[in-house]
Image (cartoon, rainbow, N blue to C red; front, top):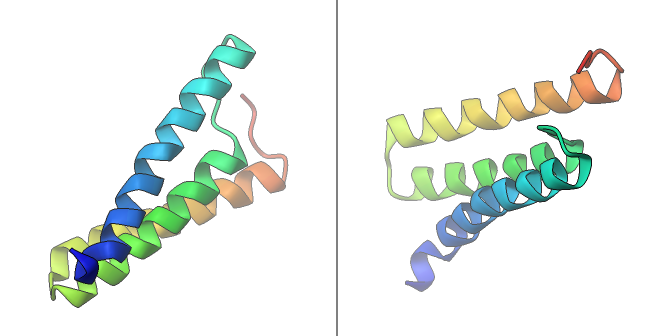
Length: 85
């Protein structure tokens, strides 16, 4: 269990991002994705990438690393005011 603690923390953060997104959506009364949502997903994805490297899973590593990159792009869009929604 302690060997995969990083993976568990990553999974919890990834799930927590959905809880935050749900809260923000209810608060704004419309579907809302904030930078906070994407930052938590970046952290979760990077931790899951570390876990995937530890267990030597190429596909799991690639998926989580690419997910983190997509979240960085979303943060960039939010910060640069290019989000039209």
